Amino acid sequence: MRIYNPTFGVSAAGGEKVALKAVNWKTDAIALVSNSKPNARELLDGIRSKLGASRQVENIKFLAKNSASQPAPKDLIEEVAANYRGALLAIAD
Image (cartoon, rainbow, N blue to C red; front, side, top):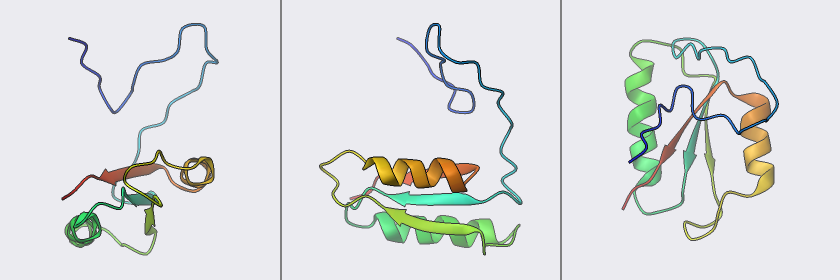
């Protein structure tokens, strides 16, 4: 079994070296991404509310895939990478 630390991930062998900077969950922009399953948005609403107890929520945005049965489209992944320091994905039913 291989266990991954989502804070750092596993780098590709021989891939480009990228300097990692830790996410500041109290101030950085965060994407809350729904996989479009039932109750995913409600789960993310709850997460945003909980985060709001300790930080401003103006830079926490909701995004969604078009379908739970399809991978995230390239433009969604690029939007998250370009505009957010952290992302949380809701998988719900």
